[in-house]
Image 1 (cartoon, rainbow, N blue to C red):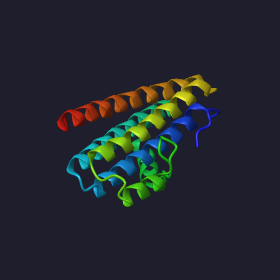
Image 2: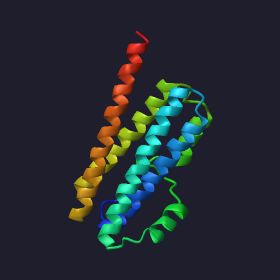
Image 3: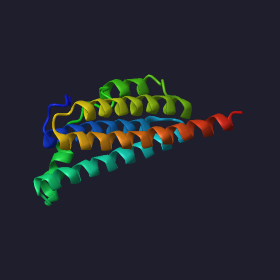
Image 4: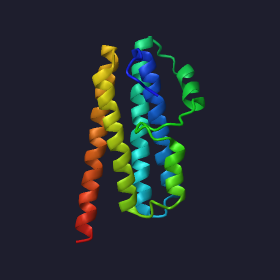
Length: 165
């Protein structure tokens, strides 16, 4: 887990793994959701997390001066990502889905808001305490990305409220 004491490269690897864990969870949630709108929301969030992974990979490779995708591609396939960016173990979230806590789009939005809110707070804390200035910049950028997710989910929630009025 990231503590803020990492150098830039280690911070990028840790952030990448958390994004991967979150992406894998959202993909799993999309696969098991019975509600088509919940399935769509989780699928879209999974795709966003994958784009975050691509962004972090590009940063890592540019810092390393490594434009060879093969070595990172192997890491991408084999790296285990047991934790989400929200600091919640992927397994814990999958158990929530398996217990059918998320039955519809409202449940999907609630869970996604929890994850994205915690991710925002996590990246905010890291951006404030990171010792490496470059790592602070990366964490600040990831925090901004989480704000976009939260805004998107808020908009979806507002649309949902209007539908049921």
